[in-house]
Image 1 (cartoon, each protein chain N blue to C red):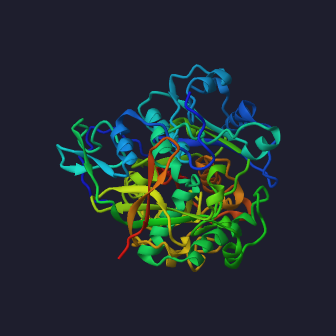
Image 2 (image 1 turned 90 degrees about the vertical axis):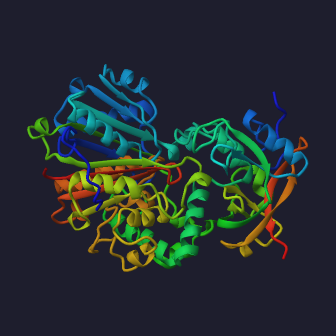
Image 3 (image 1 turned 30 degrees about the vertical axis):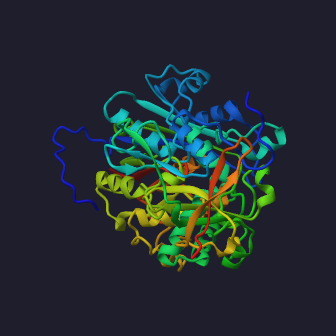
Length: 395
Length: 140
């Protein structure tokens, strides 16, 4: 924990002032969803509001990753807080940070954030992938990266894995164990894309895509959608379901292109995590559940280190005993993760939805007993935009 | 309209802030932007220094020597133009001057490319007279 002392006399509190009160997500073992586009977003918003016991007419803040005008229009909401922050996969953790702050300051009352993407079924429909922004999004990357043929985003993560292995002796077997532990959780999720148990040998035998990452070190590409609803802690107590209070939030972004990442073995989660933990007033022993972005196995390993659950460089040996899986000391990615549950492109929404379900005791066969504090830590871009949320079942 | 790139590498257009860089590549010279206020080079080319935001940019020759910081071998191409090259090595190279570039390591078995390997710049011709800087193992 950071020991930085700040004068917070005049700082409005964010801790415990807002809560996630409604969640919804959609995914399927086939990888396909029936709905797509705005219809899917609307279904998620409606379902999350129903979960909370709220109506669309209660919503006065709308969050969408990249769209601050079209989405409110479609939902028929005239929000007084609009937010189109798009930081890739971590967008929804950033939305929690922004919504909690706005709610704590009284600038809005009921916020909804929604995400839907259907890359799996879009191929069948002949539609372009909703996610990714193509190669036109970043002119600098087009000039200084695209000529070299790095597959995106996996190539950038593979470079990070290469550096971690060279610097710390991390092995492919250790990375594979992360995929294996995550799959163990997925065997308990009937909506997961992959539900058959997996072995380290199977991961290592899967095709090498970008060395040192194999196919089974990589997240899925499926349809998926989700939404969450937030309101003030005061209002949350009167709603349908137990609130998941926002205890701490932190965000940091340190590059866009991988060549600009200061150190490929340390992500900006080393900044966002301590901010969130300090705000929440928690230590590592307080955490019952980790929801860590797993775009690739290396992502999860870096987040474990950067959040301080083990020392820098020791992530490989830390995960080796299977402690991330069911019955392990540190339950992580209990929905089966981006590796085995679903990954439509910007997976951060699903980290939050699962964290809330676990805090409520709603996670069924994969429920972590006595889950009171959950950490959801998102990663966007190529380990670029990192955001950490600490959620708790009580303030 | 720029003519379509021939099959092969993607060829970027020349941004104003990188004109000096690309002209130098026509002579197979690697140059880097330096901030005269900070006294340090930076990568990639920008109209202002990313440390102090001053527009005091001066181009200076680079040694072309560096070391591999990280490497990944692409076993599938990033786009069809790269298909004939598979497998190829994408690497981050730390130049002696203190900047890090994304590039390819060529003229070597891809499985031989290691973190820490010393490399030097070499050039691949582009369709318009420019050359693309890539790196090869340094000759001892």
